[in-house]
Length: 92
Image (cartoon, rainbow, N blue to C red):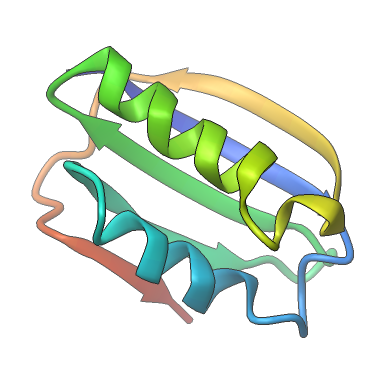
């Protein structure tokens, strides 16, 4: 299953980024989690059964959503998968 670890930099904390990401994820066949980092970035780990579904979710989040203008930099890394993760959650 395609999976990604993504770090978002910009004005991504204090603007509802995690909650909006979780809400957006409910409309896609993706699992994973999102969390704030101490350095001001947001980390997202997400996977899907289909690469096209994962790409569509990320496009919606990073380009089409109301959050897109808060993102200044995106750092992506491939993942082997998210063992034991069910649904989509916010980690604190």
